[in-house]
Amino acid sequence: MNIQIFGTKKCSDTRKAERYFKERRIKYQFIDLKEKDMSRGEFNSIRQSVGGIENLIDENAKDKELIILIKYLTDVDKEEKVYENQHIIKTPIVRNGKKATVGYKPDVWKEWE
Image (cartoon, helix red, strand yellow):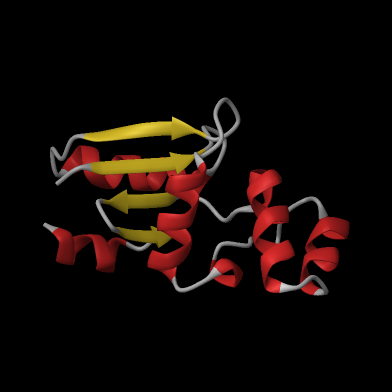
């Protein structure tokens, strides 16, 4: 397994995801989205894996105006706006090769083991 966890240190679900993999002695790479954004390739791979851009957006993000704006954009513009504003993506994003989850999903991660 080649696990990557994208999230922030302040996110409780991200910390729970890290703990999940630590407890099972599964090595992972943590990427802090406050310090470094996802690359275009990572973003596209995760978007495809989770079933579209709508599944990446955190409806409870602090930037409510941006969330509302995104709802009215075309799919191409929506994708670009989310990529440019990665702070509105739901965390943690846990990636294992071409597979990915958004949010705390231990039931899915068990299947990867």
